[in-house]
Length: 64
Image (cartoon, rainbow, N blue to C red; front, side):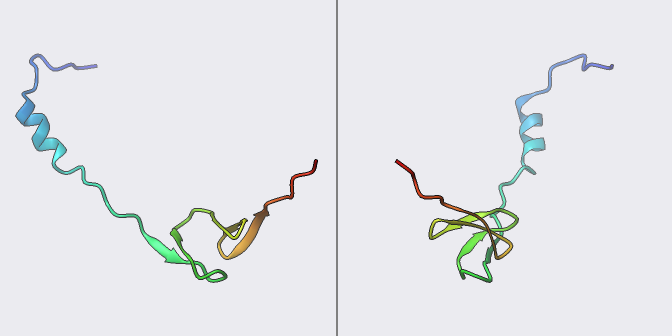
């Protein structure tokens, strides 16, 4: 594998890194609950876990 013969300057590295930008996450509203959530992620609403508008899991009561 080829390796660089000399060290890259800090300015050269910084010029390359200018294109790395943070982007805002895309939000969408759930069809069932109407809440905003991050797309393609499950979200909790009123103790239930929703994904694509359907209940995936519910919070079970704690038995003593």
